[in-house]
Image (cartoon, rainbow, N blue to C red; front, side, top):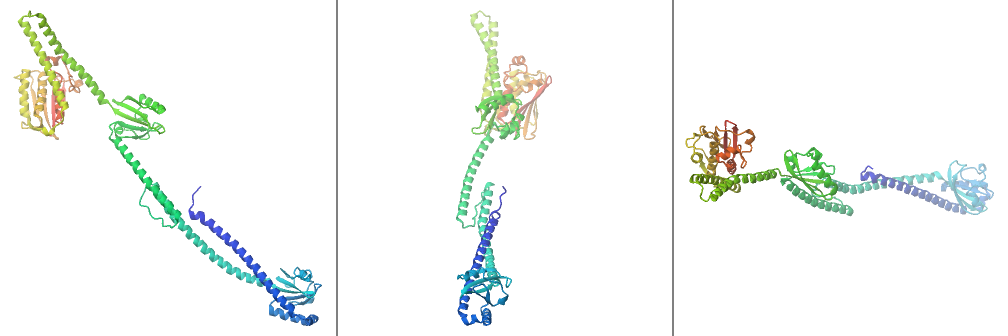
Length: 575
């Protein structure tokens, strides 16, 4: 059903009602007026008839010619048609015609009752004059005196009354319809204003309410109710928006990826972490983003029994712990929370490897110390001095190795526990530190005559912890000495500052590192050649310590190597 404007609905019906009412009222009024005019005319005719009866004497009745003249004169004076009829219905005198030419009148509807003694009136067509007449018959002696008026005169009077009355009705109708139009407009305008305000409220436009401009109590009540509803809606919308913003802020700040599915397994929402991890598209099926059978089984099971489920899935080499929950009160909506535990799994693997490596590294020196010390104790002094000295030297060497491992582990532990206290960093000149490191490394490796060269800007300095930077140089230079022949040179290059960083490179011409091992050499206890490392006395922690020292200085360490041709380790210090 198509809605229509108020004036189009009400106005035609009311106008039709008013018109019908006015027509009926006019018809009733005109009919009443006609009847009134006829009755008034009959009353006048009755009065004239009485006067005529009283004015006609017996002498006139006996002289037909004088009676005819007298009747004619009275008709001219009264404007009435006068007829005298005897008791047999014969016309004896007539004001407008010759009585001898007139028909018998005894059966006429107004004459017959009068001959019987009862005055009577009638409106009928007159055959004598050829038009409608109003007749009044009054008993007169043994006969009847009848008066008549042409109905045309009454019709003319009625027409005049009708014209005036119709004009009055038209004026009244115009005034009524105009007033009706104004009344409908007065009602329609505030209703239209209320409708416009309702549309604004429906569009969440809660601008300042305007006055309806109507004095109608009902309109004011509706306007106040609408304003109250708008205020309530505003409060509810503000509350919903605040809750939504809070929820969105929580979702946006979560490191976990959150995806919401509808009952058809389509993605209807995803937080920024989910966008970064999976790049989902709204309204697409979850299988287009994560097509794993385990995840689908969890989703289907949770949708069926509403039990929260958790599990682990692998997506593009990343391990995620997934929690699937059905939203309470929803029609099958599910919330998927993905927690990236790849790093945790890696750390767990590193922890297991570290424990295994520490146990293995400590087991070798402890086993040697235990074995040789037991041999000496069980000999009860029977071991010759040379052999005893050799056993003690082995115990001492393994003790030093054990101490080196413990010292390196303590160093790593300290580096991991302290923060980057940059306010404690001071300007440090690098060349003196490198020179001190060279002296220490020469003595430790007993390569006093080794060719070691420092190149570049010898005045270069950085801000940092001098002790830690020196330790990094010692570890790199010592490794270069251990894993290269003493006849090959080692070069320490200080490059000029470039792109916001300073680079110091330690280059050797040693054994080099296989490509498969380059990515792992900074792991704790990782060795490229374990037999050679143990022979050289390495702990497997030196490069890991260097990496942590650079992290403390917001820098990094990089390596380039070619197996059989040597390696270059670069320390990148930010300026």
